[in-house]
Image 1 (spheres, rainbow, N blue to C red):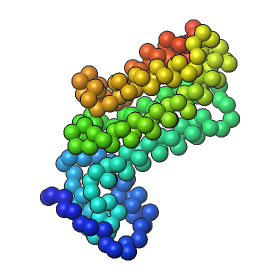
Image 2: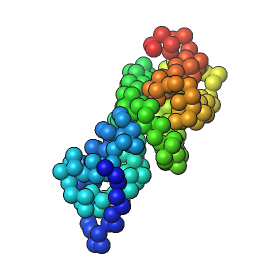
Image 3: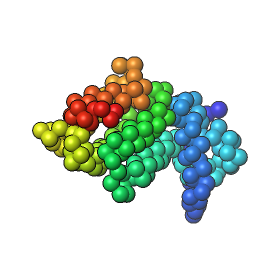
Image 4: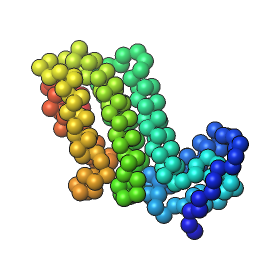
Length: 210
């Protein structure tokens, strides 16, 4: 079954419930199995939705892939905000919660999805990378600041420098091409970066909490 381009009907209104239903279904398929082998028509049939209704929300697969990626990033931000946005937690509790949250989310993204992004929609990864940088800077700045006050992070290393190291490592390693070269899953790559960088900037007291 092949994808067919159907123009959005003139005057069609947006139904946020139907749109989210499409994104959720696509996310289940795309992140686990890639998107090359899943057609828009297949998803419409699975959802019991007419092609006209489906294409009124997403006129191309690339647009749907972008919506899936944005949906994923929004969920990551929401989960991290719940963890770090309220009353300050103990550093070790915040660290463990942050790591568990990020490992859960990176574990959802399988290598086949990244391969499809690299081959068919590389421009979309730049959107994710930009948003990822904002999330990392905001969340880890809070964590590192509280860790410094608690004596868990070395006083001779600034939080800003650690953030820059994290961003550089993420940019250099956590991209479809490099992960494929290194034969790493997103979860394994992310865990390795955090272990190396955080392990290097934590005090003995801090490392004992890992």
